[in-house]
Length: 190
Ligand SMILES: CC(C)(COP(=O)(O)OP(=O)(O)OC[C@H]1O[C@@H](n2cnc3c(N)ncnc32)[C@H](O)[C@@H]1OP(=O)(O)O)[C@@H](O)C(=O)NCCC(=O)NCCS
Picture (cartoon, rainbow, N blue to C red):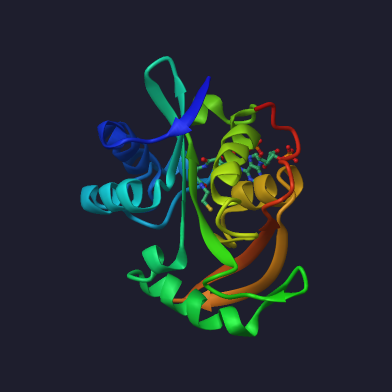
């Protein structure tokens, strides 16, 4: 498996994975194993890659089998859910610090093709993304829909993220989670 930052040429492969596991287009059978909610257009993938170098991918030969997005809050601020999270940062403490757009970034979505789940792809791609972002930010922040049990288990039990709080947005219930980006990822081998 090869872990690297995505380039513009990778967009079609990433968009294919997004389509397969996005809440609006996922099939019923796959939904119980998680889904992604933030929807990227081609233009937004391009902006994330060019401005933030913010897409990590795992490739099996030349096939993209997983991606992780990560970027500054400024990048995410066009989506209403992130506007809500940004406005709440000054009221949230984690690792003894009040959160801000300077000391934290938003990680996710993460998506792994179902043939590669339950393997070391999860810790390895998380670790790859962490080592890119820890040069810029000491704290990772993310959210998980409370009905996405697999993602919750993966992020808390396996990767060791901490639940900071719960919040509601657009009639959905979410956990907000954090991670200290100076910590090497448990179970990663890269
Ligand atoms: C979420 C995701 C990245 C996790 O990676 P993964 O390789 O599947 O994670 P793992 O299988 O290593 O770990 C999942 C954990 O949940 C458990 N689990 C498996 N299926 C589950 C289910 N349907 N419901 C609840 N828990 C489940 C597993 O047992 C495992 O926990 P354990 O090792 O303590 O037993 C991956 O499933 C995925 O891409 N899902 C679709 C997109 C998605 O949900 N992205 C996250 C958005 S927040």
